[in-house]
Amino acid sequence: MNDTVGRLQQLERILEISRELTSTVALVPLLARIVDTAAELTESESASILLQDKRTGELRFQTATGDRSEQLADIPVPIEGSIAGTVLISGEPLIIRDAQADPRHFAGVGQKTGLEIRSLLAVPLQVKERRIGVLEAINKQDDKVFSQEDVEILMTMAAQAAVAIENARLVGALRDAYQRLGQLDKLKSDFISIASHELRTPLSLILLYAAMLREDLGEGAKAQLDPVLRAATRLKGIMETMFNLRYLETGQMDLAPSRFDLRAEVQEACKDYETLAGTAGLALSSSLPDEEMPIYADREKVRVVLDNLISNAVKFTSAGGHVRVALCRRGKDLEMSVADTGIGIPGEDLERIFERFYQVEDHLIRRQGGMGLGLSIVKGLVDLHGGRVWAESVLGRGSRFVVVLPPRIPEIASVETGSPAPFAS
Ligand code: ADP
Image (cartoon, rainbow, N blue to C red):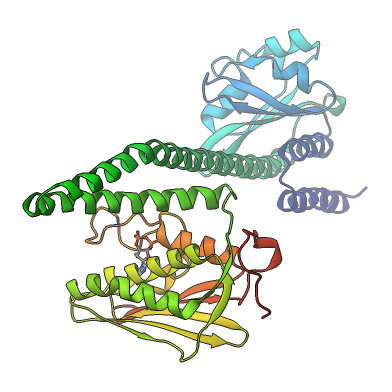
C-alpha cells in the first residue's frame, strides 16, 4: 500500500469517528471505538484512555481495547511516577521506546494484568485549557518505534475523545440540574400542601369566632373587629389560591358544572370590584350583551377566573386609569375579556406570566402584592373547561386578557353533580 493511499485511509477512519461523535451521546461505546481505532491506526497491541479522578487526583482507566477494561478500571495510576501522569502534567506527547528501562514507568499495570509493556505513546486529553486525562497506545507492532505520524493520529483521536467526554459531562450536569430542580419544585409543592392544610382549621376558627363576637359587640368595638375579619378573609383567599393550585397540580381538581347565565356572573363580579376600583381611583366599566349568555360550566371556578383577572387589572393600573370587562359571543364560544390602561407586560413575558410563581417584576422590589399564582390557576381552570386564555399588551399602555370558553365543557373534563341537564350548544 503506498503512503498516500494509507494516509487517506487513516483520515477516512478518523472522519468516521468524527461523524459518530456528532451523532451519538452514548459515551462508553464511543470511547471504545476511539481506542480500537487508535490502536489500529498506530499499529499498536492495545490502546487505552485514562481520566483524572477529581477526588483523589489519580488517573483511572476509563476504557481500553480488548477485554482488559474491567481489570484495568481497578488500578489507580499515580500522577507522580507514571508516564501517563508525566504527560498529564506537561501537556506534551511522549514516545517511550523501552518502558521497562524508563524510571517514570509505573510497573503496577503490567504486574496486575500480565501485559508486558515495551514501547508506549501517550498524548494528553485536553478540554480547552483543562487537561482531563491521557490517551495511550502500547507496544507498536514488530517492536517498531512510534513515529511522529503516530503522535499526530493519537492527538487527533485524543481531541475527539475529549469532546465526547466533555459533552457527556455537560449532559450529565444538565440532567443533575433538572433533577435538583424537580426536587425543589416538589419541596415547594409539598410546602404549599402542608401549609395550606395546617392553616385551614385555625383560620376557620378565627373567622367563625370573630364573626360571632362581632354580633355581640357594640358599634365601637365592631369597628375595631372589622380589620381582623377583613385580614382573616384575605388570608382565606390566599389559602384558597393555594388549594386550587394544589388540586390542579395533582390532577385532583374536579369540575362541578351547572347551567348558568355567564352575563349575570360577569355583571356580579364587576359589581363586587366597584368599591375596590373606586378606592384605587379607577373607572370600572363593562360591555355586556343584551341577551343572557347561557353556559354549562363550573360556576365557582369561572368566578375564580374572573376575580383573578379583574383584581390583577385593578392592581396593575394606577389612579385615573380604566378597567373594562367585556363579554360577547365568538362563533359558538363565549369570550370574556378584561382590559386595563395599566403598566402593561413586556412581550417576552406574555406567555410566562401563566407559569406558577412567575412575576414580571421582582417580588422584592415591586409595589403590588401577590404570590404569582393567580394566572397559573386561571390557565389551569380554563384548560379544564376546554377553553383558551391569553394576554395581549402594550408596555406602559395597558393589557388585555382574553378567555374563550366553549358553551359546555367537553365530555372528558366534566363531572356531573346532579345539576340541571346541560342545554344543547
Ligand atoms: P400575582 O398578581 O399574584 O403576582 P398572577 O399570576 O396573577 O400573580 O400574575 C403574574 C404576573 O403577571 C404579575 O405578577 C404581573 O407581573 C403580571 N400581570 C398580571 N396581570 C397583569 C396586568 N393586568 N397588568 C400588568 N401585569 C400583569
